[in-house]
Amino acid sequence: LDTNLNQTINLIKKAHTTFLGPKVADKTYENGYRKVLGSMGYRLWISQASLIQMPGYVSLNLKWKNDGVAPFYEDWPVWVLVEDEDGNSLEKEAVDISLKSLLPEETLQTKTRMQVKKMISLAGKKYKISIGIEDPMTGKLAVRFSMKGTYNEGKNYLFQ
Image 1 (cartoon, rainbow, N blue to C red):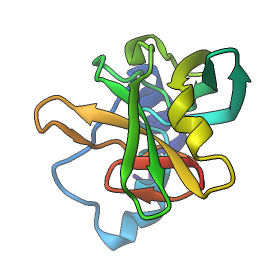
Image 2: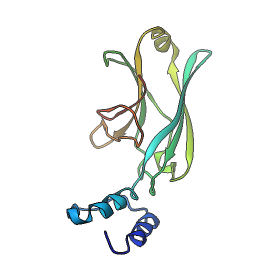
Image 3: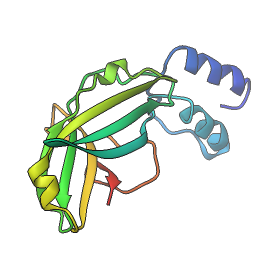
Image 4: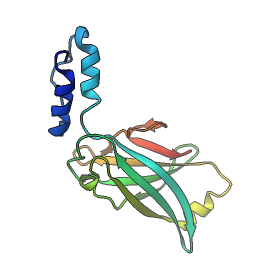
């Protein structure tokens, strides 16, 4: 974490390393430790999000990116969640995406159809739209995206 740090980071990137452990480095090596951690794993985020009203439905169009060095190794379920301003669930729709295919330095686009009746009923009201990736072992939303914005209990908020 000190000597040949650049070489270590390059090897970590080439190996698509996703985990370093089980110990945390001594404070003496904190700078190197932080650089190594910043060079590991997947970094999923949404670079663009738009809602488009279509005849009979509303489409949530997303551009997905992975700025990490490794893919997400499993195809966990991905959800769009719509809530009212009090946090009550109004809609939950599956996103058609293979997380394993979202490779580093690539972009994927998805379009998710939302029920128009529920979306129209929100016209003029405050609502929230988030994306969540469900851990199949726990059944809970579990992945924090690598982007600015509100994150709460596995929900990465796009619109609030």
